[in-house]
Amino acid sequence: MSKKVFDPDWGNPSLRTIMETELPQAVSLIPSTPGWWILFLALVGLIIRVIWRKKQAYLRDCYRRDALVQLTRIKAQLNAGELEAVRELAPLLRATAIAAGGRDIFSGLQDEAYATALADLCPNHEPLPVKNLQQLAYAPLIDIKLVDVETLMTALESWIRKHRRNHA
Image (cartoon, rainbow, N blue to C red; front, side, top):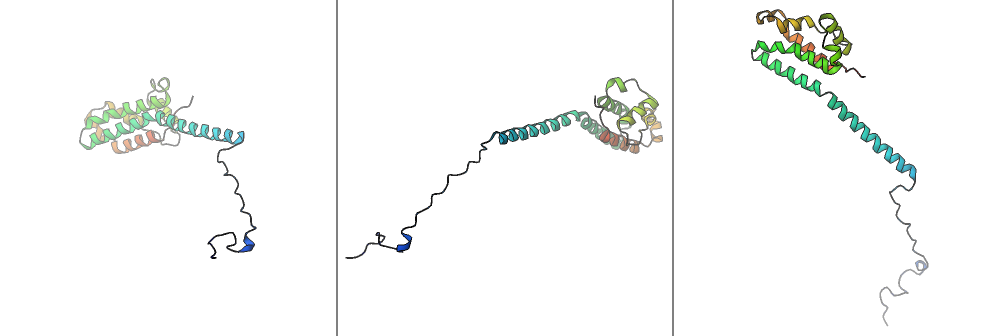
C-alpha cells in the first residue's frame, strides 16, 4: 500500500502538536476617546482661522495692489513720453493714504501735516517729498524737469509697499 501525500502521518511528528496562534483583531485608526476628537476639532478650527485671516489680509491689501498697478501704468506712460502722467502721482498717493489711514485723517491735510501723517503710517521710511508731488500735480509741464521723477516714484513705490494700516 502506498502512502498518500499529506496524510496524517506525513511530515515531522514533533510539529504536529504545535497549535497555530490566532492574530489579534486589526487596530482601528479611528480615535476611541473624546480627547482626540476635541484635539482634532481644535486643529481644524485653527486651520480654518488661519485661512480666514490670510483671506482677510489679502482682501484688506487690495488697495495696495491696485495702487502698485496704477503706479506701474504711470511709469509706462512716462517711459512712453507722456509727461501728463505725472499729474496722477499726487492723487494716487492721496487715495492710497485715505484707504490706509481713513478719510477723516487724510482728506483735509496739506503740506507738513500731510507729510507727517504719511510718515506716521510708515515710521521706518524716509519722509515722502509732498511738495515735489504737489509741484508735479499743478506746475506747468515745463517745470517737471526740475523734479527727479524717477527717485520720487521709487520712494512712492517703497512707501506703498511698506506702510502699515491704522488698526482701530
